[in-house]
Length: 193
Image (cartoon, rainbow, N blue to C red; front, side, top):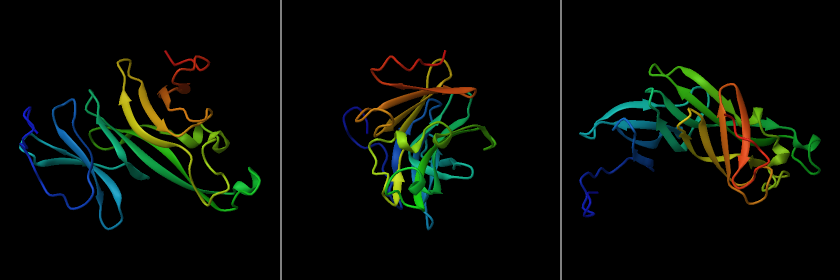
């Protein structure tokens, strides 16, 4: 749309299309499922609306919520990791073969190599997900909605739901060497410098 609200570009897409935006390098991007398996793919387009590149997470299911091109030309992707876990040993009434969905963040270089990877399974216990019924068969215990690179080079992730504090949206800030948690409005978890 232009400033008057009139369309300057329109294309009928072949399926659901998410996260359409202008990237900092001027390219347009969107995320769409790759059919028939429904693994999501992030696409970039030039100013003539021609698709010039595509991005998928490496080794995981790409998530539909967010995709970022960062100043060094690399890409940040959200992804999903699924694990079958015996929750009967962790919570009363837990399923012996529960399907648990975790969050992965990957940074891919221009050759699509993974240069940074972060997994919620390495940093959060499933029992921290106070908002989830841990006796369910399928559990999405860390539901990421957005990622962003801050001015200090840290990766920020917004997670809906609640890990640790009920009905709180969390902001996670981390570097490759470490991770820390900072629920918004709570000072007991220091951010990394």
